[in-house]
Structure formats: C-alpha cells, structure tokens
Image (cartoon, rainbow, N blue to C red; front, side, top):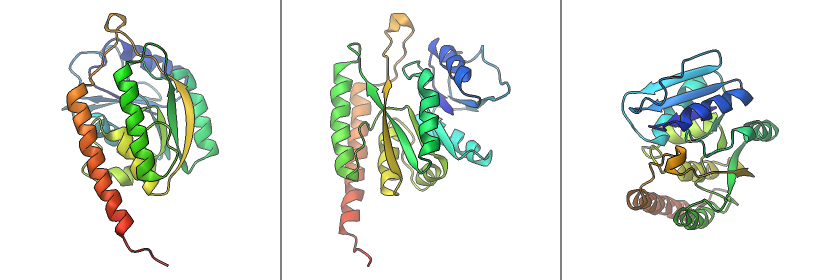
Length: 234
C-alpha cells in the first residue's frame, strides 16, 4: 500500500503505525516534505520510505510509488492519505475485496459524520454527478482517496497523460480507468476530519483547488465529447 505525504504533521506517525499493524507492506512517499513529520520513522522490513526532492502533488507521489511497486512485482496498490482521515482498520477489508475482484478498482465511499465541512460535502456531490455523466458508471464517490487500484492499468493511464499529478488525481484516475474498462466496486468507509487543535492538517485550498477541479472536468468533458463522436467499430 502507498501513503503519499506532504507535511502531514503529527498524524503521519499514527497513520503509518496503524497501517503497519494490519498490513505487511506499507510504503510512504514523502512528496518534498519539510515539516520533519517523518523524522521518527525509519525503513524496516515491509516498510519503505521513498523521498521526492520537490513537492509535486498527490498524483506525482502516487506515480513514483506505483512505478516502484510494479517493478517489485505488486499487482495492486491501496492508496490512503497520511493525515489520519482514512480508516486503517478497514485496509484488510479493501484488500480482501480486491482479491475477490482483481479486475476492479475498489473505491471507498465516505460515511460522513457531523464534523465534515459542508462546502466539501456539497463540492464532492457535484463532482460525483459529473463523473457519473462522464463514465455512465455508478462511481459513488469520485474524490475519496482511500482506494485499491489494479496497478498496471493505473500506471498506463498516468504515464500516457501529463495530468493526474496533483489534487485532480483521484477523480481523473476513476474516470480514465472506467474508460479503460476497469470495473468498479464501491465500498463504504469511515472518515474523520481532525481539527487543527487535534493535529489535523489540510492543504486543501477552496478557491485554487476547486478551479483545478473545474479545469480538469472541462478537459475530461472535451475528451468525452471526442469519444462520443468517434466512429464505432463493428
């Protein structure tokens, strides 16, 4: 499994330890982190730390880890965030689903509590609607980052596109893999948003990141239109 991290603060240690307690292979990809959050972590059996010199975005960190994972012989990767929001105790369930449906991507569907920011909840509802239009597939959540991907299709999609490197990674990965014929298994998962006083760290910027999402959807709809106009083969 891959944990991309950029200045994740004190929750990083807890996330790594919780993940390692339930899964034997955990890789941390430090995306140009400068906050020292990984200083207490050392590589060990089943645990690797990959370091990027500069911050490139979540997708860029996932791509680096994905390339290494494929070379190492892994066929699937579970990706989860480093800030403690995702449920480490559900890793085994998601991996079991992936083993049962090896051709599918296992997409987490967040069960929101009252602490979830309303703007983000409504924003993802709009994203989910757009993704379902683009794919005609029941992708119940386009933005939740707790997922298992078949490694080779994801690597191909990323290496044949200059995009999917930043915050747009999760939504575009779901769309492009659906276009490639990868099936979907939706699985509810818990999620928790931590306050700053609880050690929570968020790099989400409402204006800039929503503009990036809007740009991504405009680009995907242009590609979708070209797909619709393409002559069918009999």
